[in-house]
Length: 118
Image (cartoon, rainbow, N blue to C red; front, side, top):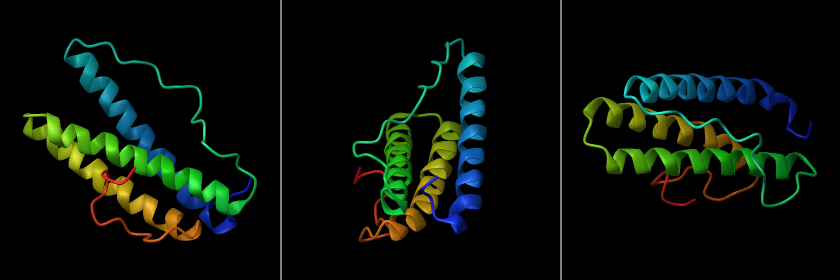
């Protein structure tokens, strides 16, 4: 409700990217014999969302958290295919997070080493 109007498509596109990666990971985990954990019901922000700036901060934080998680996968797997997938996801989270950080007035908007500053 608080997101800037011109960011609606970016939010929908980002959510779709996250859903595709989630589905891929669930399939990958199940194929390896693991049981995927169901997603949390909601992302609880540290601060209340009261306006466009705070809404943008929440999305930027979520993307930074995703980048951190994907960097952990890059750093802890020996599987080349999984590492490649994780690297692509890390870059995508960084790419998606940059305009949200800019909209929220965060500096720098573009993170030099994504996944390390969350």
